[in-house]
Length: 388
Image 1: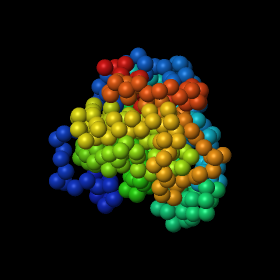
Image 2: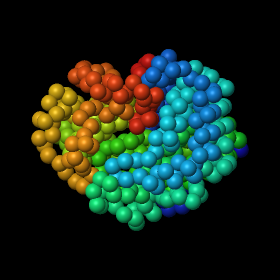
Image 3: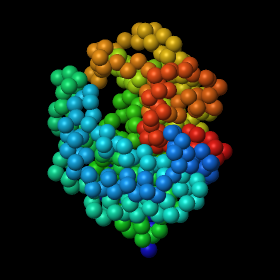
Image 4: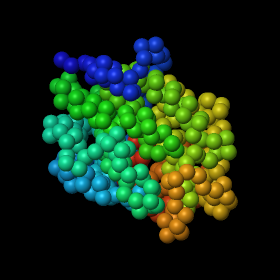
Protein backbone atom coordinates (compact mmCIF):
# COMPACT_ATOMS: atom_id res chain seq x y z
CA UNK A 1 0.00 0.00 0.00
CA UNK A 2 1.22 3.50 -0.82
CA UNK A 3 0.09 6.58 1.05
CA UNK A 4 -0.67 9.80 -0.78
CA UNK A 5 1.76 11.81 1.33
CA UNK A 6 4.78 9.60 0.64
CA UNK A 7 5.77 11.60 -2.43
CA UNK A 8 5.16 14.89 -0.66
CA UNK A 9 7.79 13.71 1.81
CA UNK A 10 10.15 12.85 -1.01
CA UNK A 11 9.67 16.36 -2.39
CA UNK A 12 10.54 17.90 0.96
CA UNK A 13 13.63 15.74 1.39
CA UNK A 14 14.85 16.66 -2.07
CA UNK A 15 15.38 20.31 -1.14
CA UNK A 16 13.06 21.42 -3.95
CA UNK A 17 12.51 25.18 -4.11
CA UNK A 18 8.84 24.65 -3.30
CA UNK A 19 9.43 22.88 0.02
CA UNK A 20 7.40 24.18 2.96
CA UNK A 21 9.04 24.66 6.34
CA UNK A 22 7.88 22.68 9.32
CA UNK A 23 6.63 25.85 10.98
CA UNK A 24 3.97 26.43 8.35
CA UNK A 25 0.33 26.56 9.41
CA UNK A 26 -1.14 23.08 8.88
CA UNK A 27 -4.53 23.65 10.47
CA UNK A 28 -6.52 25.85 8.13
CA UNK A 29 -6.85 24.36 4.65
CA UNK A 30 -9.32 21.54 4.18
CA UNK A 31 -9.52 19.63 0.92
CA UNK A 32 -12.97 19.48 -0.70
CA UNK A 33 -14.09 16.02 -1.83
CA UNK A 34 -13.89 16.86 -5.54
CA UNK A 35 -11.04 19.37 -5.34
CA UNK A 36 -13.08 22.50 -6.18
CA UNK A 37 -16.08 21.65 -3.98
CA UNK A 38 -17.57 18.94 -1.81
CA UNK A 39 -20.48 18.60 -4.22
CA UNK A 40 -20.63 19.01 -7.99
CA UNK A 41 -23.93 19.81 -9.70
CA UNK A 42 -25.65 18.90 -12.98
CA UNK A 43 -23.93 21.64 -14.99
CA UNK A 44 -20.71 19.67 -14.60
CA UNK A 45 -22.07 17.15 -17.09
CA UNK A 46 -22.30 19.68 -19.95
CA UNK A 47 -19.35 21.39 -21.51
CA UNK A 48 -19.32 24.97 -22.79
CA UNK A 49 -20.66 23.81 -26.16
CA UNK A 50 -23.45 21.75 -24.60
CA UNK A 51 -21.64 18.46 -25.16
CA UNK A 52 -22.08 15.43 -22.92
CA UNK A 53 -19.36 13.37 -21.24
CA UNK A 54 -17.93 10.54 -23.31
CA UNK A 55 -15.68 7.62 -22.51
CA UNK A 56 -14.59 7.55 -26.14
CA UNK A 57 -13.61 11.25 -26.22
CA UNK A 58 -11.63 10.98 -22.98
CA UNK A 59 -9.84 7.89 -24.23
CA UNK A 60 -9.05 9.52 -27.60
CA UNK A 61 -7.65 12.62 -25.96
CA UNK A 62 -5.40 10.75 -23.57
CA UNK A 63 -4.20 8.40 -26.28
CA UNK A 64 -3.37 11.34 -28.55
CA UNK A 65 -1.40 13.05 -25.79
CA UNK A 66 0.59 9.88 -25.24
CA UNK A 67 1.36 8.75 -28.78
CA UNK A 68 1.99 12.23 -30.22
CA UNK A 69 4.19 13.65 -27.48
CA UNK A 70 7.32 13.96 -29.65
CA UNK A 71 5.35 15.67 -32.42
CA UNK A 72 3.63 18.11 -30.07
CA UNK A 73 6.88 19.07 -28.36
CA UNK A 74 8.68 19.52 -31.68
CA UNK A 75 5.92 21.91 -32.78
CA UNK A 76 6.22 23.90 -29.57
CA UNK A 77 9.94 24.40 -30.21
CA UNK A 78 9.01 26.29 -33.40
CA UNK A 79 7.00 28.92 -31.50
CA UNK A 80 7.75 32.62 -31.64
CA UNK A 81 7.08 35.17 -28.91
CA UNK A 82 3.78 36.15 -30.52
CA UNK A 83 2.62 32.78 -31.88
CA UNK A 84 2.56 29.52 -29.95
CA UNK A 85 2.42 26.37 -32.08
CA UNK A 86 0.36 24.22 -29.81
CA UNK A 87 -3.19 23.96 -31.19
CA UNK A 88 -2.97 20.23 -31.89
CA UNK A 89 -1.57 19.73 -28.41
CA UNK A 90 -4.02 21.96 -26.50
CA UNK A 91 -7.15 20.53 -28.10
CA UNK A 92 -6.85 17.38 -25.97
CA UNK A 93 -6.58 19.05 -22.57
CA UNK A 94 -10.16 20.27 -22.46
CA UNK A 95 -11.97 16.92 -22.98
CA UNK A 96 -9.84 15.28 -20.28
CA UNK A 97 -10.65 18.06 -17.82
CA UNK A 98 -14.35 18.19 -18.69
CA UNK A 99 -14.82 14.43 -18.50
CA UNK A 100 -13.07 14.32 -15.13
CA UNK A 101 -15.53 16.78 -13.60
CA UNK A 102 -18.44 15.05 -15.33
CA UNK A 103 -17.41 11.64 -14.01
CA UNK A 104 -17.12 12.95 -10.46
CA UNK A 105 -20.44 14.82 -10.64
CA UNK A 106 -22.38 11.83 -11.96
CA UNK A 107 -20.44 9.10 -10.16
CA UNK A 108 -19.60 7.57 -13.54
CA UNK A 109 -17.10 4.92 -12.48
CA UNK A 110 -16.44 3.73 -16.03
CA UNK A 111 -15.55 7.24 -17.19
CA UNK A 112 -13.41 7.86 -14.12
CA UNK A 113 -11.53 4.60 -14.70
CA UNK A 114 -10.99 5.45 -18.37
CA UNK A 115 -9.31 8.71 -17.42
CA UNK A 116 -7.24 7.22 -14.61
CA UNK A 117 -6.12 4.31 -16.81
CA UNK A 118 -5.24 6.74 -19.62
CA UNK A 119 -3.12 8.76 -17.23
CA UNK A 120 -1.43 5.57 -16.04
CA UNK A 121 -0.62 4.67 -19.64
CA UNK A 122 1.08 8.04 -20.03
CA UNK A 123 2.95 7.54 -16.79
CA UNK A 124 4.13 4.06 -17.73
CA UNK A 125 5.26 5.34 -21.14
CA UNK A 126 7.15 8.21 -19.52
CA UNK A 127 5.32 10.69 -21.74
CA UNK A 128 6.67 14.27 -21.64
CA UNK A 129 9.73 13.25 -19.64
CA UNK A 130 12.50 12.45 -22.15
CA UNK A 131 11.45 13.41 -25.70
CA UNK A 132 14.33 14.74 -27.86
CA UNK A 133 12.93 18.30 -28.15
CA UNK A 134 11.78 18.58 -24.55
CA UNK A 135 13.39 21.27 -22.41
CA UNK A 136 12.67 22.33 -18.85
CA UNK A 137 11.94 25.80 -17.58
CA UNK A 138 15.50 26.17 -16.28
CA UNK A 139 16.99 25.18 -19.63
CA UNK A 140 14.67 27.54 -21.50
CA UNK A 141 15.68 30.44 -19.26
CA UNK A 142 19.24 30.05 -20.52
CA UNK A 143 18.19 30.42 -24.15
CA UNK A 144 17.07 33.48 -26.10
CA UNK A 145 14.68 35.68 -24.13
CA UNK A 146 11.20 35.96 -25.60
CA UNK A 147 10.60 39.33 -27.32
CA UNK A 148 14.38 39.92 -27.34
CA UNK A 149 14.18 40.92 -31.00
CA UNK A 150 10.50 41.74 -31.22
CA UNK A 151 7.28 39.68 -31.37
CA UNK A 152 8.68 37.24 -33.94
CA UNK A 153 11.66 36.24 -31.79
CA UNK A 154 12.05 32.52 -31.09
CA UNK A 155 10.63 31.65 -27.67
CA UNK A 156 12.05 28.47 -26.18
CA UNK A 157 10.17 29.14 -22.94
CA UNK A 158 6.87 28.17 -24.53
CA UNK A 159 7.91 24.50 -24.56
CA UNK A 160 8.17 23.97 -20.79
CA UNK A 161 5.37 26.47 -20.19
CA UNK A 162 2.77 24.58 -22.19
CA UNK A 163 4.00 21.13 -21.22
CA UNK A 164 3.71 22.38 -17.65
CA UNK A 165 0.17 23.60 -18.27
CA UNK A 166 -0.77 20.21 -19.68
CA UNK A 167 0.60 18.52 -16.58
CA UNK A 168 -1.23 21.03 -14.41
CA UNK A 169 -4.59 20.15 -15.94
CA UNK A 170 -3.86 16.44 -15.64
CA UNK A 171 -3.05 16.99 -11.96
CA UNK A 172 -6.35 18.80 -11.53
CA UNK A 173 -8.16 15.91 -13.23
CA UNK A 174 -6.43 13.48 -10.87
CA UNK A 175 -7.37 15.59 -7.85
CA UNK A 176 -11.01 15.81 -8.97
CA UNK A 177 -11.11 12.01 -9.38
CA UNK A 178 -9.15 11.33 -6.19
CA UNK A 179 -11.92 9.23 -4.62
CA UNK A 180 -11.66 6.80 -7.56
CA UNK A 181 -7.86 6.49 -7.47
CA UNK A 182 -6.68 3.27 -5.84
CA UNK A 183 -3.41 2.59 -4.04
CA UNK A 184 -2.29 0.61 -7.10
CA UNK A 185 -3.03 3.62 -9.30
CA UNK A 186 -0.95 5.83 -7.02
CA UNK A 187 2.01 3.48 -7.36
CA UNK A 188 2.09 4.34 -11.06
CA UNK A 189 0.86 7.92 -11.13
CA UNK A 190 2.59 9.65 -8.25
CA UNK A 191 6.23 9.17 -9.32
CA UNK A 192 5.37 10.54 -12.78
CA UNK A 193 3.39 13.49 -11.44
CA UNK A 194 6.06 14.17 -8.83
CA UNK A 195 8.69 14.41 -11.57
CA UNK A 196 6.41 16.68 -13.58
CA UNK A 197 5.87 18.91 -10.58
CA UNK A 198 9.60 19.23 -9.92
CA UNK A 199 10.66 19.83 -13.53
CA UNK A 200 7.83 21.99 -14.85
CA UNK A 201 5.35 23.23 -12.27
CA UNK A 202 7.52 24.24 -9.30
CA UNK A 203 10.02 26.28 -11.38
CA UNK A 204 7.17 28.16 -13.06
CA UNK A 205 5.65 28.97 -9.67
CA UNK A 206 9.02 30.14 -8.41
CA UNK A 207 9.96 32.37 -11.34
CA UNK A 208 6.89 33.20 -13.47
CA UNK A 209 4.95 35.50 -11.16
CA UNK A 210 4.74 38.64 -13.29
CA UNK A 211 1.20 39.34 -14.42
CA UNK A 212 -1.64 36.83 -13.98
CA UNK A 213 -1.86 33.98 -16.46
CA UNK A 214 -2.98 30.35 -16.72
CA UNK A 215 -4.16 28.72 -13.51
CA UNK A 216 -3.17 31.87 -11.58
CA UNK A 217 0.49 31.43 -12.47
CA UNK A 218 0.17 27.68 -11.83
CA UNK A 219 -1.28 28.13 -8.35
CA UNK A 220 -4.10 25.71 -9.21
CA UNK A 221 -1.46 23.16 -10.16
CA UNK A 222 0.29 23.51 -6.81
CA UNK A 223 -3.05 23.18 -5.03
CA UNK A 224 -3.90 20.09 -7.09
CA UNK A 225 -0.51 18.57 -6.31
CA UNK A 226 -1.11 19.25 -2.61
CA UNK A 227 -4.48 17.49 -2.92
CA UNK A 228 -2.99 14.48 -4.71
CA UNK A 229 -0.21 14.11 -2.15
CA UNK A 230 -2.37 15.03 0.84
CA UNK A 231 0.06 17.82 1.74
CA UNK A 232 -1.91 20.42 3.66
CA UNK A 233 1.22 22.40 4.49
CA UNK A 234 1.76 22.97 0.79
CA UNK A 235 -1.94 23.78 0.32
CA UNK A 236 -1.82 26.39 3.07
CA UNK A 237 1.32 27.91 1.63
CA UNK A 238 -0.22 28.12 -1.82
CA UNK A 239 -3.49 29.65 -0.64
CA UNK A 240 -1.78 32.15 1.64
CA UNK A 241 0.85 33.32 -0.79
CA UNK A 242 -1.60 33.49 -3.70
CA UNK A 243 -3.84 35.80 -1.71
CA UNK A 244 -0.92 38.14 -1.08
CA UNK A 245 0.29 37.89 -4.68
CA UNK A 246 -3.09 38.87 -6.10
CA UNK A 247 -3.10 41.98 -3.93
CA UNK A 248 0.24 42.92 -5.44
CA UNK A 249 -0.62 42.09 -9.04
CA UNK A 250 -4.06 43.73 -9.15
CA UNK A 251 -3.36 47.41 -8.65
CA UNK A 252 -5.68 49.73 -6.67
CA UNK A 253 -6.71 51.25 -10.00
CA UNK A 254 -7.98 47.86 -11.18
CA UNK A 255 -5.34 47.45 -13.84
CA UNK A 256 -3.34 44.22 -13.63
CA UNK A 257 0.44 44.33 -13.57
CA UNK A 258 1.78 43.46 -17.04
CA UNK A 259 -1.53 42.07 -18.39
CA UNK A 260 -3.32 45.39 -18.77
CA UNK A 261 -0.30 47.15 -20.26
CA UNK A 262 0.38 44.84 -23.21
CA UNK A 263 -0.29 47.26 -26.03
CA UNK A 264 -3.01 46.38 -28.51
CA UNK A 265 -3.75 43.23 -26.52
CA UNK A 266 -4.11 44.97 -23.16
CA UNK A 267 -7.84 44.34 -22.63
CA UNK A 268 -7.49 40.78 -23.93
CA UNK A 269 -4.80 39.98 -21.36
CA UNK A 270 -6.55 41.98 -18.63
CA UNK A 271 -9.66 39.81 -18.89
CA UNK A 272 -7.46 36.73 -19.17
CA UNK A 273 -5.88 37.47 -15.80
CA UNK A 274 -9.07 38.56 -14.07
CA UNK A 275 -10.94 35.45 -15.17
CA UNK A 276 -8.39 33.06 -13.69
CA UNK A 277 -8.03 35.14 -10.50
CA UNK A 278 -11.78 35.13 -9.83
CA UNK A 279 -12.05 31.44 -10.70
CA UNK A 280 -9.28 30.60 -8.27
CA UNK A 281 -11.01 32.67 -5.57
CA UNK A 282 -14.04 30.37 -5.84
CA UNK A 283 -11.87 27.33 -5.24
CA UNK A 284 -9.91 29.01 -2.43
CA UNK A 285 -13.17 29.67 -0.60
CA UNK A 286 -13.98 25.96 -0.62
CA UNK A 287 -10.54 25.24 0.83
CA UNK A 288 -11.14 27.67 3.69
CA UNK A 289 -9.65 30.90 2.32
CA UNK A 290 -12.33 33.43 1.43
CA UNK A 291 -10.65 35.95 -0.85
CA UNK A 292 -13.98 37.64 -1.48
CA UNK A 293 -14.20 38.50 2.22
CA UNK A 294 -10.73 40.07 2.18
CA UNK A 295 -11.56 43.78 2.09
CA UNK A 296 -8.48 44.82 0.14
CA UNK A 297 -8.65 42.02 -2.40
CA UNK A 298 -12.39 42.40 -2.91
CA UNK A 299 -11.86 46.09 -3.69
CA UNK A 300 -9.13 45.15 -6.17
CA UNK A 301 -11.43 42.63 -7.85
CA UNK A 302 -14.18 45.23 -8.05
CA UNK A 303 -11.82 47.80 -9.54
CA UNK A 304 -10.58 45.28 -12.10
CA UNK A 305 -14.18 44.57 -13.11
CA UNK A 306 -14.76 48.31 -13.46
CA UNK A 307 -11.77 48.48 -15.79
CA UNK A 308 -13.20 45.56 -17.76
CA UNK A 309 -16.44 47.47 -18.21
CA UNK A 310 -14.43 50.51 -19.32
CA UNK A 311 -12.44 48.45 -21.82
CA UNK A 312 -15.52 46.89 -23.39
CA UNK A 313 -17.30 50.23 -23.65
CA UNK A 314 -14.34 52.46 -24.51
CA UNK A 315 -11.17 50.62 -25.47
CA UNK A 316 -9.28 53.86 -26.11
CA UNK A 317 -9.99 55.06 -22.59
CA UNK A 318 -8.86 51.70 -21.17
CA UNK A 319 -5.61 51.89 -23.14
CA UNK A 320 -4.88 55.47 -22.08
CA UNK A 321 -2.94 54.04 -19.15
CA UNK A 322 -0.15 53.23 -21.62
CA UNK A 323 2.19 50.27 -22.05
CA UNK A 324 4.61 48.68 -19.63
CA UNK A 325 7.26 45.98 -19.80
CA UNK A 326 8.73 44.04 -22.71
CA UNK A 327 5.89 41.64 -23.55
CA UNK A 328 3.93 44.07 -25.68
CA UNK A 329 2.95 44.65 -29.27
CA UNK A 330 1.70 47.89 -30.75
CA UNK A 331 1.12 46.53 -34.25
CA UNK A 332 -2.58 46.96 -35.15
CA UNK A 333 -2.42 43.62 -36.99
CA UNK A 334 -1.82 41.90 -33.63
CA UNK A 335 -4.77 43.55 -31.89
CA UNK A 336 -7.26 41.60 -29.79
CA UNK A 337 -9.76 44.36 -28.91
CA UNK A 338 -12.15 42.13 -27.01
CA UNK A 339 -12.57 40.00 -23.89
CA UNK A 340 -10.31 36.93 -23.95
CA UNK A 341 -12.34 34.12 -25.53
CA UNK A 342 -10.94 31.58 -23.06
CA UNK A 343 -12.27 33.60 -20.11
CA UNK A 344 -15.38 31.46 -19.82
CA UNK A 345 -16.04 32.15 -16.13
CA UNK A 346 -15.65 35.92 -16.02
CA UNK A 347 -19.20 37.01 -16.76
CA UNK A 348 -20.81 34.53 -14.40
CA UNK A 349 -18.50 35.11 -11.42
CA UNK A 350 -18.73 38.89 -11.74
CA UNK A 351 -22.51 38.72 -11.55
CA UNK A 352 -22.77 36.06 -8.84
CA UNK A 353 -20.13 37.45 -6.51
CA UNK A 354 -20.29 41.20 -7.20
CA UNK A 355 -23.68 41.81 -8.80
CA UNK A 356 -21.88 43.22 -11.84
CA UNK A 357 -23.31 42.54 -15.28
CA UNK A 358 -20.45 43.18 -17.64
CA UNK A 359 -21.37 44.72 -21.00
CA UNK A 360 -21.81 42.36 -23.91
CA UNK A 361 -18.83 41.78 -26.14
CA UNK A 362 -20.09 40.25 -29.37
CA UNK A 363 -16.65 39.24 -30.63
CA UNK A 364 -16.01 37.44 -27.35
CA UNK A 365 -19.38 35.71 -27.54
CA UNK A 366 -18.67 34.50 -31.07
CA UNK A 367 -15.22 33.12 -30.25
CA UNK A 368 -16.08 31.68 -26.83
CA UNK A 369 -18.77 29.42 -28.25
CA UNK A 370 -16.07 27.29 -29.88
CA UNK A 371 -14.24 26.60 -26.61
CA UNK A 372 -15.10 23.34 -24.89
CA UNK A 373 -13.97 24.01 -21.33
CA UNK A 374 -12.30 26.75 -19.26
CA UNK A 375 -8.80 25.31 -19.37
CA UNK A 376 -7.03 28.56 -18.39
CA UNK A 377 -8.70 28.40 -14.97
CA UNK A 378 -8.96 24.63 -14.56
CA UNK A 379 -12.59 24.75 -13.47
CA UNK A 380 -16.03 25.75 -14.67
CA UNK A 381 -17.98 28.36 -12.72
CA UNK A 382 -21.24 26.85 -13.98
CA UNK A 383 -20.16 23.45 -12.65
CA UNK A 384 -19.19 25.01 -9.34
CA UNK A 385 -22.36 27.02 -8.81
CA UNK A 386 -24.70 24.21 -9.84
CA UNK A 387 -23.50 22.15 -6.86
CA UNK A 388 -24.19 24.83 -4.26
